Figure 1 (spheres, rainbow, N blue to C red):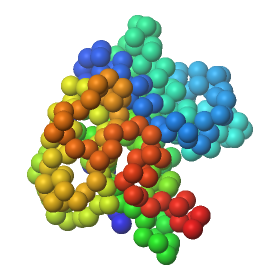
Figure 2: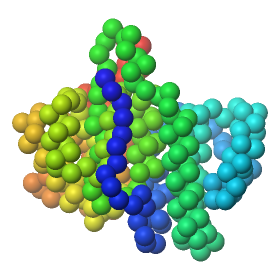
Figure 3: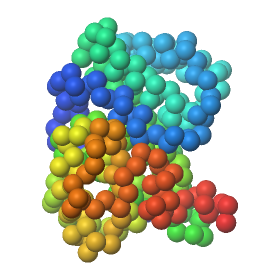
Amino acid sequence: MQDGYTRAAGQMFPQGAGGVASLASDVVARLVSGRAHATVRLREDLIDRFLTAVVSVDLTDFETLKPDLQRARITPILFADRYVPEIARRLGKAWEDDTMSFAEVTMGVSRLQAILRQIGSDWVADSYRGSQRRLATVLLIVPGGEQHTLGAFVLMGQLRRMGISVCLRISPTDGDLRALLGDRQFDAAMISVAAVEKFPAAITALRLLKALTAGKLRVALGGAALHKLDAPPEDVRFDILTNDLSLAIAQLGLVTQSAHSDA
């Protein structure tokens, strides 16, 4: 199995207020309601300091926080699942309250994503290759025109820690997907949509995935758009629509490392 991600050409964040304001809900919507660390109380002092650091022009501010995070026994998993979404939520709130500029928020989110990539470097499903049971492979798609990627990285980290191999594609073209599915096989696909207006792009991706696999590939839809969407068109046939990762994994029939360990 091979984990990985690619991004099509284009800006990482939309140049508009609405895109930044919906960032936090996009991140939070991708988290599991019953996730681990859900009852852990977050340290306000560390959140405030890290929020200042991610928008600072001085990159050394990050280094000064590391000893404090270690002393507070904040693990990379806890930081990725709880602190990063909370900091992203506060960045979005600061934009709405006009206490941070668009440039500051954009830089802050970019740095959060870079941190996720760095601390998640060991969360690769291939590390479970010694397992006697073949684990799942998932194609994770952020459709064209959908610019929020931080939440997708949070989700990718969660899946990989479960032993699921994840291939992330951001704004893939039809040709990209055709080539990918011609070379690789996936047990399921997940499409993440933050903005309702991007839902048509998700439908296009769904139909292509089904056509390329003769309808065999199971596809889940999640993201902040589900909170704003009354119901998808009747002719749209996602296998599951949910922001509950545990439910999505179960409905898609995916095999995780935890499932193997309990067997």
